[in-house]
Structures are given as C-alpha cells and as structure tokens.
Amino acid sequence: MATTLAISLSSFRGKYVLVDFWASWCVPCRAENPNLVKNFQQYKDKNFTVLGVSLDRPNAKEAWLKAIRKDGLDWTHVSDLKHWDSEVVKLAS
Image (cartoon, rainbow, N blue to C red):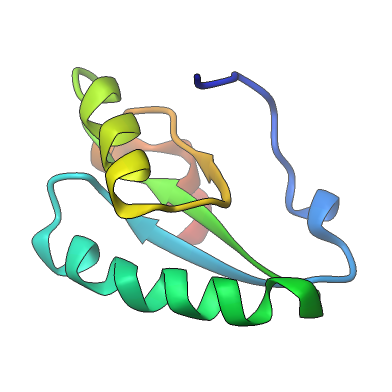
C-alpha cells in the first residue's frame, strides 16, 4: 500500500543515494531495473540506497505502483504524477 509522505534528500544524510528518474511506461527504464535491484541488494547494507523518482502521468498511479511491485523495487519512491511538469524535474533542470 502506498503512503503519502514528504521526502527530502536530507533524510538520506550519510548514505550514497542513486537518484533514478524513471516511469512505468519507459521501456529502457524498466529494462534497467534488474541491474538496479542487483546493485541495491549488493550494497544496501553499505550505506547505499536508491531514490526512485517517477515521471508517470497523472492518470497512471496504479501502473506506477504495479511496476514497483512487479520489478521488485524495494526502496523509497516519490512521484507527483505530473509527468514532465513534475516539480522534481524543474529542480533537476
């Protein structure tokens, strides 16, 4: 079940954080997920984590959550479901 929380990068202080911009509809992103899972499993006990930032569309919440479960992405995920208009995209630009 999804939980709505505010997440800040400062909450990851002391960790190596890979910020992964992806979307449930992005074929190359999904193809890379097994490699992310492998690295996460290998290094999660060594202060490493992944922060998944979804660029899914406003009507795609269920597809996004289903992709997280199906691909086994057991790390923190965020999305405002605004696609390219996401606030995070604006900050990263």
